[in-house]
Structures are given as structure tokens and as C-alpha cells.
Length: 428
Image 1: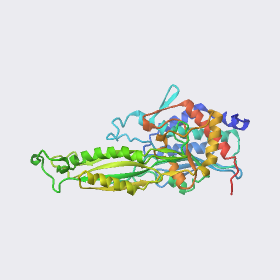
Image 2: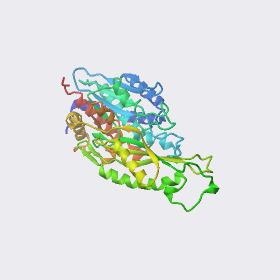
Image 3: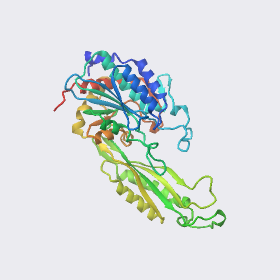
């Protein structure tokens, strides 16, 4: 597909050196979930300096979402670009990540033709690409009919309140994209810029988090009085009783994802399960059997599932293991898919841009990209048709580098998509 003179004038304004600088600047501001304030200030100041109308939208003052606007001149369709500012690893999270303080999680650098760093891949590299695409549109002098919104958000990474770990210190989702939408961040369409290897994603998994607790004896037993052999399910120690249940849940998890695989026009969800934490006893007092032990499950769900059905499955697993315990649902975030008819103008605009820059038609992204939580769920829940599409692949698979060439391609694709969609007349 040939790129016209108007579009080429925008592409010519994409400054590769500035793209690299902005991406590295963003990724070198360490911003694990809950500590996004400084990177939000950077985005706000950058937007203001470049002449965009910028404002902060915050549920909590020290964690603002940042919204920028490039106003349209008539009655065109509006588009919002969205990326998150928070990253996944706190430096002190050594119980989840042995090298939690490793620079790759908290900084970024250039290594030849690749930018390296957790923050680059998730999600500041894609954010930099649409910031530079929007700047190129503005600097070219091209006027869009519809508004182009630029949304940098907090709290996309899942930090959920449970037990003594309560909000506001432990809170995601609510302060982020959903809050930004309900406080003015509304457009006709949303493009969530995250790594999909330039595949289209119109559906994302939801999630249900469960705390499964197993009880030991009614009274603790001092170590010298423990008798063996004892059947595991009768062991006075709840930690020991938990062991076979973990194995049963792991076996159930495989059957669960096969039974609930979900295919739709927006992609394929393979809803996986992870045992993310275990608690039982305290390390400074280990001289008696533990009376309760809990595991915490991340169960991904599809748009047609009910979390209470999953709770019943887990209760049956506990009872089937001959154990006494309880199952608590402590987080529920539904999955949503974009209506294929309503999202078609955005999908078509992305496709035309993809054809012009890369050739061929973008393919549906591989199942892992549509089997995680990304913030298109918030937009589709709010009846704003949304697609995830962008350069790079997820850090979830162990990738911490993004090719500069892919980021340049991303900026070109986002620029052409905005030119296309925002020049279409808005019905109604």
C-alpha cells in the first residue's frame, strides 16, 4: 500500500534519536506499582513542553494518571493511545524474584540496536512510540478531524489487597485506566500499546484470585511430641497437609485450562492457573506444628466464566483430599472482548497501517498475548471498543529487550493509524 504525501510528512517527523532518548528516560525512572509518581511527572512535563494539553487525573495524589490531548478540528472519530507507567518488580521482592534488585528490572540501557530493560518492554517502550507518533503529527502541521488522546496510567500490574496487605499501599487497577476513563479519558476507540509482536488482540483474560486455607490439629503440638508415621491428611501440621493438595491443584490446573479454552474473533484465551504464594507459620517460631496453611491462586478466566464455579471446584478438591479448610475469593476482575462490529473501524485502520509499513495483514496474536490481563478490559467494559497492538513481546516469557527498529516501526504504525481513524467522520 502506497503512503501518501500527507502521511509521509508525519513519518518524516519521527525522530529516532528522540524516540530512543524518551524510552530510556522513562525506563530509567524506576516505577514499580505504587511508585509511579516520578514517571508521571516526566510524562506530564514532556507533554506540556511539546505543546499538548496535559492534565493529571489521580485517585491518589502521589499516583496520577496523565492525559494529553491533540484536539481535532471538526467532527472526526477520536482515538486514545494507552500504556501503563508501572513496572513489575520492587527491589525488595526477593521472595518472588531472587535477583529482585538486578538493574534489568529497574533501569534501561542501549546495547547496539536493542534497548534493554524490564521497563522498556513493559510498557515504556511502546509508550514512547506513541508519544513520538503524536509529536510527529503535531510537528508536521497535519490537522486531524477527531481528537487524539494520550493516556499514561498507573496500576496496570496486579497488586491486590489481601490479609494485612490492604489499600492504599496495595492497590492496582482502580487508580489506573478505569479511573482515567471515568474521569474524562473517553474516546470513540482505544489502542492499548503493549507488546504483541504486531499481532491484533481484541480480548484479554480476566482473573479470579483465591486463598485456599487448610487447617491442622485444633491444638499445636510441640516438636518432641510429634509421632510418626502418620497419614498426610491426618498430620497435625497444616503445612504437611497442604502438600498433596498442591499436587492435586496443579493437576486440576491443566484440566481447567483445556476445558475452558475460549476462542472468539478477538483471539484465543487459554486460562492458566498459578500458585503465587504460600503462608504457614512464622520463621522465628518453628517449635510447634502449624495450625493453618494457605496458598494463593491466580486463576485466569474467560468472558463466559463465573468465579463461583471455580470456587466450587476448589472446595471439592479440598474435600476430596480429606482435608478441612476453606476457599476465599478475594479478587474478581472479569474478562471482556471487543464487539467485532464496533471495533472494526479501529481494526481496519491498524490493518491499513500495517499493510503500508510492514506489508501483509496483521495476524491474531498468539494465545499468551490474549490470555493475560491488559487494560483493554477496562475500555471494553466501558463500551469503548479497544485493541491491544504493539512492538515487542511480553516480559512474561523472559524477554527484556526491544529492537529499536521495532520501536520505530511502532511509531510509524501508530501515526498512520491515528491519521486514518481520526480523519473518519464521526456518526451521531
